[in-house]
Length: 471
Image 1 (cartoon, rainbow, N blue to C red):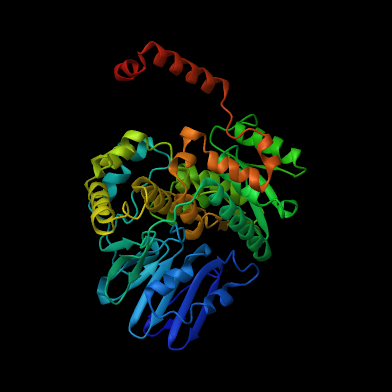
Image 2: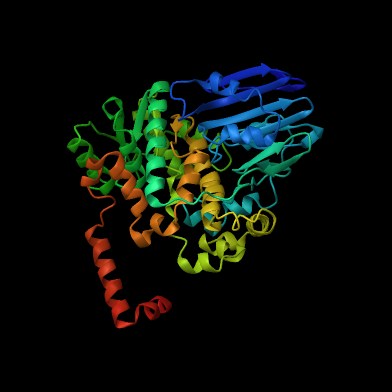
């Protein structure tokens, strides 16, 4: 397809929707759904953009949508690039050779341009951080290639002005009681799952955790038609909580459950293709899991995962001390190894300064660490995960929706955090499908119980912090 003097190439497995109206052109790669209008398709949703004259109007149209997509918008001399709320349809781009080039991953751009690795490319992959972290990742926006950018969540690319611009948040978050949040979120999630069921043949990934439990609860009306599965990978045995809890839960609800064996290293031909698919490919971990999916997963089905809900769960890894005196340096300390990378420090310092001093997100009522988790952890780590697994399954993430995320962040964080046992989310499950709560969520193993008991005893004796210093 040509777009003025630009050429668009789309893989046949990707959905492509094109609309030209009133001197404007909209091109959608991927899909989106509107929970407020169950049953309408990509083209109908895209037609609702036809009256948009400004970026602000486009962002308002994107606000209630869920899906995984890239949206190109052309209006007279303007050309913009947007993607989904959490950046799970990744966009990498460059302005080399006085042109604009964009793709889902850097290796595609290398096919047509003299793209060069940054001097620190090899240093990163040879670092202790990468060696010690199976799921290693870097902050959003870092590509390891010269003159190449990544589209960060909540931003769009203004192509004609050669810049990336934040468009969210722009207004104060709406403060909600837990009860109000549960009511709004229950309705939206039910509609989201109904819309997905109208569009796709669905499969749901199950674990022992909170995220998949919420999505299951929201799927009560469509559950009999779903294919439920759990991935068996790394050191998981048939007695692992993810497998045992999922099986017990689903059987109790009268639903079938399938375990997909992903414990075997993939064939070399498969892993070679996997490695060539993206420069950040986690071949020896995610690659082996992907091979198991390739061999065992029903390819015609759209896979549902519960990711992105962690944005609202006031992620427990970010403890109280970090949140109370937050700084770029403290963020870097969270992920061991980042502080050794100058490019990671520069990226986080720039991001932190912009949201604090330029966009003033604190004054709008947003927690800096919630936004960090959204834009960097989800936008980079999770975006990379889905990018790598695109070759084995298509993914639907119900919480990849800015309206849903805003509702979660509008509820006081004490109800969304570990301190109150994530009561907002357990109440949400109760409101959607109470029977889903009958089986424990992430129950502690005997080893974990013993560890917690010893920790409690040490705290009582007043020597816990001393023991940590002596380790």
